[in-house]
Amino acid sequence: MTRNLKTSLAIVAVVAAVIVTAALVDGPAPRGGPTPQATGTANAVLVRPDSHRLSTAADGKVTVVEFLDFECEACGATYPTVEKIRETYADRITFVVRYFPIASHPNAVLAARAVEAAARQGRFEAMYRVMFQRQTQWGHQDNKPQTDTFVGYARELGLDLDRYARDLHDPAVAERVRADQRDGTTLGVRGTPTFFVNGSPVNGLPDYTTFSALLDRELAR
Image (cartoon, rainbow, N blue to C red; front, top):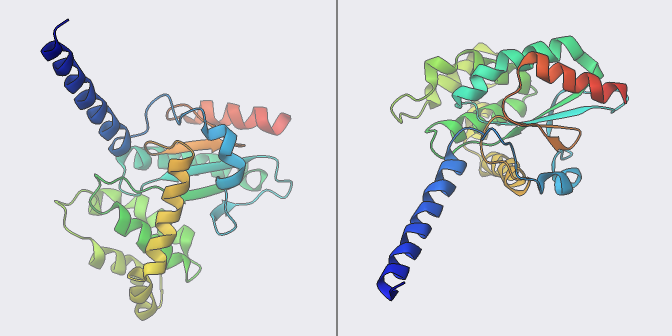
């Protein structure tokens, strides 16, 4: 093999690796789920003391963690399944939400900050629901910041708007979102939504039947 041919092949390999890496970071969750090392570090970073819980099981037997992006269409499509799971299992499972905004989604970071700002007034779940229920109204709007839209949601929820506006632009709120994202990266999260059940990653996007069967197995242990 000539030196020029070896050089050309090396360049092609590097370019291919860059393309694959970009696709994993910016796209939906791959069907294979997080990388295997996620399980080994899950206990340390999956659930932090300040992580948002939509439900809490008294026995702590089963914990579901979702890394999500409010602008992600796959997350929006999975939202009804999540709501059905939460309704069915109620306080038998702990359900934790972590932020993981994708760089290619223009309002993903802003949406996460908007939800976190609402959380500072005790309305995390209410804003979480509104974001998904109205995702088609504000998502992917030609890169136009949806700040006014999110403030409008805060108004509908009866939040203190002056405080909300301050929190929305507070560096501490932005850092709170980044902290979740760093934990997701540590766990091998490459796209959204990504689910973990009792520390183990769930492959792909589970439908209700698959998800409930998994939870039933864990509850029966």
